[in-house]
Image (cartoon, rainbow, N blue to C red; front, side, top):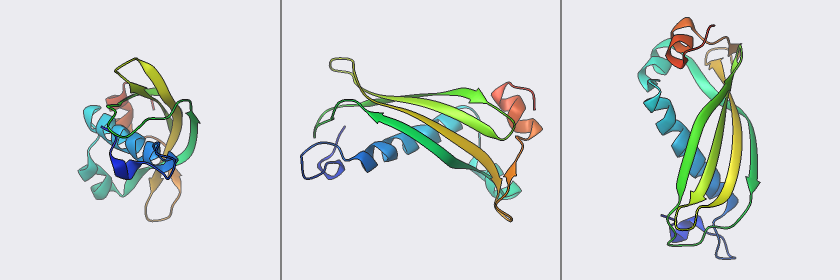
Length: 127
């Protein structure tokens, strides 16, 4: 549900709030796919957002229920692309579409890493 604090002075959801909704959905999607925060801490290899493309189509208003749908759409050597839609279920209106690229990055040196064999197996791809 859209909360009052998600809105701007115009009374509609603020653009940053949409990104927070997407961040939450992406985290939940990663967990559903079997990714574990514990693994990131033990290996020092973390997924990092490297690109976000977002289209704000219609505004959401305070009190409205919204749904964020996400899916893994593409995987390359070091990048994973996710697609998201934020929808108002009351009428099926797509409010926002978003595409994000994540790279696995070594925390120690900040360099991108190829997807590990374990992560590739989890995502059902070949590394």
